[in-house]
Amino acid sequence: MRISILTPELTVTNETTLVQQMLEHENVVLHIRKPQGATGEYQQYLDSIAPQLHHRIVLHGAFELTADYNVKGIHLNSYIRTGKEFDTITQTYAKPGLTISSSFHNWQEITETRFSFDAAFISPVFDSISKKGYKAAIKLEECRNVQLQLQEKHPHRPHILGLGGVDRHNIQQLHQNGFDGAVLLGSIWKSKEPLKALQALLNGLT
Image 1 (cartoon, rainbow, N blue to C red):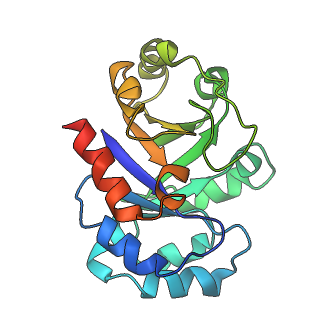
Image 2: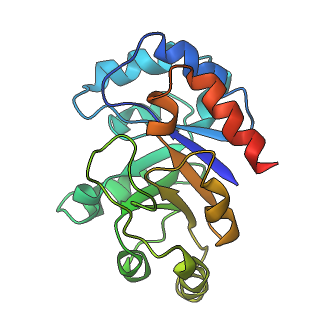
Image 3: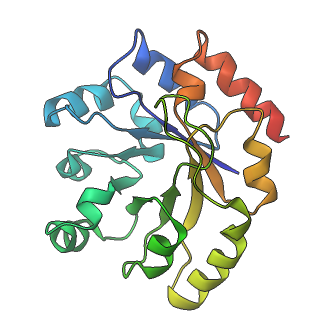
C-alpha cells in the first residue's frame, strides 16, 4: 500500500528532521500542507530536506515552486477543486512527471469528477484522531466498485487513499477493501514518538 504522510498544520519540534527520516522508507510520500504558510515557508521546508528526496514530496500550496524543485506533484483541496481557479491550475500544472491529486468527502464526488486525477484522498474513513467530532462517514466496502467505475471513465484510474483516523490497528481494513493506500496525520503527529508510530504501522502491513 502507498503511505502518504500529511504534515501538521502547525510546525512541531524537529519536524523536517523527522520527515526526512520518514522519507527513508521507500513507500512513503510526504504531503506538505501548511494552510497559513506563504511561498517562503514552503521553500524553507523544501530546502531543509535532502534534494534527492524531493521526488516523493507533494505540495498543498505554493505550486509555483514546482518550477524550481523536483517534487512529485501538487494536491488540490476541495475548495480549489470546486472553485474558479481549478481550470487555470490544472492547465498550468498538468504536465509530464508532475502528479495532481485532490481531496473528496464521498464516493460520488470521486466518480463524478471530470478531471483525471492521479490520486484521490477520501475522508473520513475512520473517526479522526486530530479533529474531535469528525466521525467516520465512508463505506469502505464500496471502494472496489468505485475503482471499476473510474477505470471505465478515465485514461488512468486514480489511486484511492483513505484519510481520517488511520492507525496501525485499522489500516488493514483499508487494504482488505481494496484501497490503494492510506494518508496518515494524527496517528503520527499526535504520537510522542512519530518515527516509532510510523514503523509500527509499516510493520503491520507486512
